[in-house]
Amino acid sequence: MILFVNALSALDVSIWCPQRGLVGASYHIDVELEGQLGDDGMLFDFGEVKPWIKSRIDAGVDHTLLVPTKAHDISVSECSEGLRLQTRHPWPMELRAPRQAYTLLPWQQITPERLGDYLSAELSRRPPAQVEKIRVTLREESHDAGGYTYSHGLRRHSGNCQRIAHGHRSRLAIWHNGQRSETLETQWSQRLEDIYLIDQADLIGTDNETCHVGYESAQGRFSIRLPRDRAEILPTPTTVEQIANWMAQEIASLHGGSVRVQAFEGIDKGAVATAQGARDSA
Ligand SMILES: Nc1nc2c(c(=O)[nH]1)N=C([C@H](O)[C@H](O)COP(=O)(O)OP(=O)(O)OP(=O)(O)O)CN2
Image 1 (cartoon, rainbow, N blue to C red):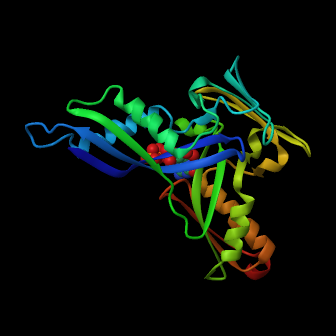
Image 2: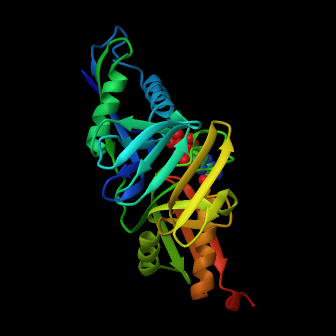
Image 3: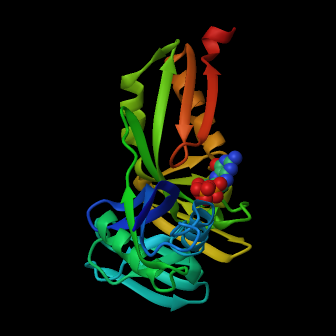
C-alpha cells in the first residue's frame, strides 16, 4: 500500500551552484510512504505523518546552506566558528559558520531530484512501524509572474533563520497606481535574482569590490564575505516585512504614485507593504 501527502511542508535552503553562485531555494515537499496496513486499516495516521517528517527535515537540511563538496574550486575546512567554506567560481565567497548551518553533499552539483533521493534515504533509515520505504519529491512552486531568489540571515531570530546563508525562492507581485505592473515585477525579479540581502547593522566592512558581514547569535558566530555586486544592503533586518517595505519605498521614490508590494518568503507566506511617492502625498 502507498500513502501520499503532497505539500506536506516546505523546504527553505540556500544552494551553492557552480553556475549561479549562492541561490535561495524553496520546495514543496511531497511524500509517499510504502508499507503494510495495521489492524486499524491505516499505514500511518496522517495526523502523525506530517509532524514526523517535518520535524526530521526541520532538524536536518532545512535552513542550511547545501554545499556540493565535489564541485570545482570549493574548499571546506575547520575553523574556530565551525566550518569555513571558500568558493571561487562563478564568484568568490568565504563563509564561516557553525557546522549545523551546512549540509555537505559529496556531489558536483545539487539538483532537487538528488536532494529528494538523499532525503528519502535519510528518512527511510529509521522508518515508523509498518512503513518500509519513504520517497520524497521536491517540487518548485510555479510562478506566473515575478519571483526572486535571495539568501540572508536574521541575527535576531531565535530559530534557524539566524543562519547567515539560508534562502528562499519567492513570488513577487507589484501594483503601481492600482495596476499590476509586469514591468516592475520583471525589474525587481532581475535585481533580486540570486542576491544576498544584508542588514546594514551587520556589515563589518564594504568597499566597491566586497561586502563583509558578520554577527554572533544563539547558534554561534557567523560571517560571510562576497562580491559587492552580489548583495543588496537594506537599512533594516531582512525580514519579509522589511523587504516589502524597502521595495515599496524605493519604487515610490523613483516612480512616484501609489505602490503596493506583495513579497513572499518562500511558499505561501509573506508581507504586503504600501508606499506613496513624496510628490503625490504633499
Ligand atoms: N514575521 C516574520 N517571521 C519570520 C520571518 C520574517 O521575515 N517575518 N522570517 C523567518 C525566517 O527567515 C525563516 O526563513 C522562515 O522560516 P520558515 O521555516 O519558512 O518559517 P516557519 O518555521 O514558520 O515555517 P515552516 O515552513 O512551517 O517550518 C522566520 N520568521
